Amino acid sequence: MKKSLVSIGVMASLLLAGAAHAELLAAKGAKATVKVEYVYVAVGMKKDKYDPREWKVNRSATVTALFEAQKAQALAQMRTMEAGQMADLKDKQATAISAAKKMEPTMNDMLKIVEKCGESEACIEKEIEAYGNSMQLTPEIKSAGKDIEKLSKQDGPRYQVWRALSQTATYSVDEFYKGQSGDPLCLEKPGQRCRREETRKGQGAVTPPPGAKNAGSGFFEVDAQKKDIVLALPTPIGPLACTSVVKSDFPDERSGSSQCTAGLGQVSFKPITVTIPGDLKKLSGSQELKSEGAEGESGTLTVRWTITAQ
Image (cartoon, rainbow, N blue to C red; front, side, top):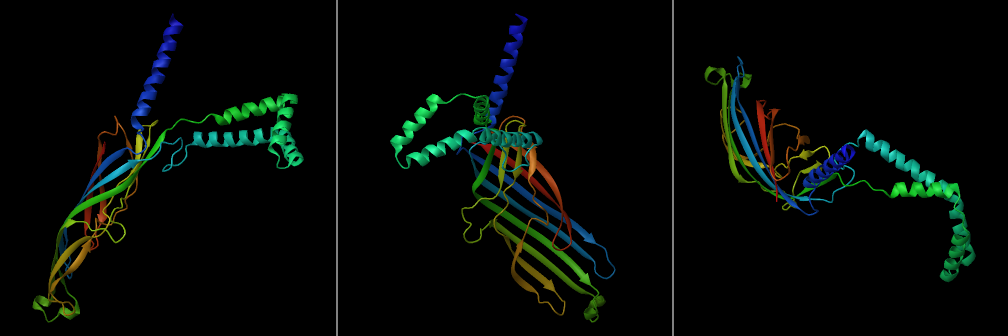
């Protein structure tokens, strides 16, 4: 009875593990929505005797992307192969070489039959049937059969890549820069300083470049065994357009307005690994990235994301 209870417990554990596995692997073609909010803020000043500056920067973008599940695979596409997987692959390669070597005499006999019969299919079938009837199951052939049987056993699906099909994005830009300069060209200005102010504003939908209207960026890969994902977040495809208004008394610069573009700070968007606590029906997270802005300001980019499987 004790042994039976242990066996039942083991079977139950395997069934539960299989069920958890299945929950994280979707049918090929399943859809999910990934929403990402980017907010870049930089507020500060540089106290300098000759070139003081101050700035207030606020840029934001919201990306909503549609993702599609690819066919689940036994091996990862977006991750480094694990040591155990590498060892298993080498073992299968060695087994395949072993099977081929053991079957070499038989393959040579098959080639002789083809050479003898030429293009006559009836002759080939007859000769192969006769060969099979007279064939002795030597230890080599039996061993080769075990090798082939081992190679035929495929690992079950563990990984699934989701790719972005399309995306839309909206944004907002609201920036202010103010500075002075003690450049020699400014000696005739009040206080022997040139002064400059600039505002940049813009908002609306992000316009993708030509040819990328229906494109989507980003991907994520599920590991159903480790219960985590490697996630590359979708980012805006296209610049954040804005209008710049400059007030300046620098001799070599005119005041006025012009078109400009802004980004999300000088950061590197690297894929992140996230644990899956439950399933993909609702998964979210956030991170903060430090950035040095184009004007030298130091800011923080806050990223908040949500994955919702349909």
